[in-house]
Image 1: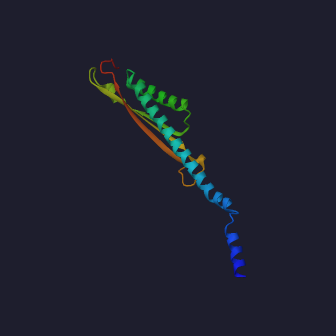
Image 2 (image 1 turned 45 degrees about the vertical axis):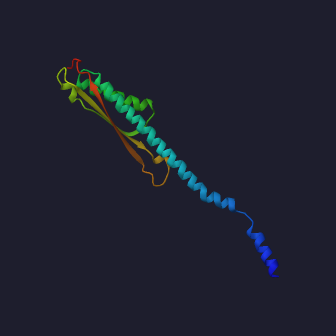
Image 3 (image 1 turned 45 degrees about the horizontal axis):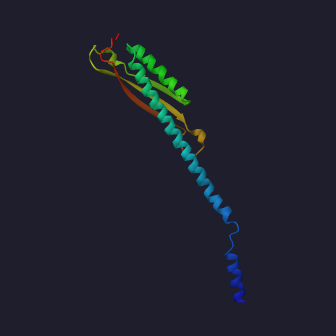
Length: 151
């Protein structure tokens, strides 16, 4: 009788019934979590690249103008254009263009700096523990032509 019981136990212990369902229940949430993290980091990286490009283009556009006011207006316009062309929806957006370099005398080297900040929404990813938004900021400095007449 003991041999029959031992044989029956070995036969039942060798079965895998339900093991796949159990593995799927454990691994599926982890897989979803990893995919959500990849999406979040990808969105942050792409948004960071776009904000960098906006700051670079804004500083360059400002440096090509002849006055501080025109430089500030051109830089802000270009930064906003870059963000909209790239399809980056900012929940809040700010641009700051330094114009002190425009007051330098002709022949003196000077620069202008653009700072662009954009808050990107992450709440639509739906991952627990992920912040609802992230603010990305980029700075870029561009030289103003030393021998170009300034107003």
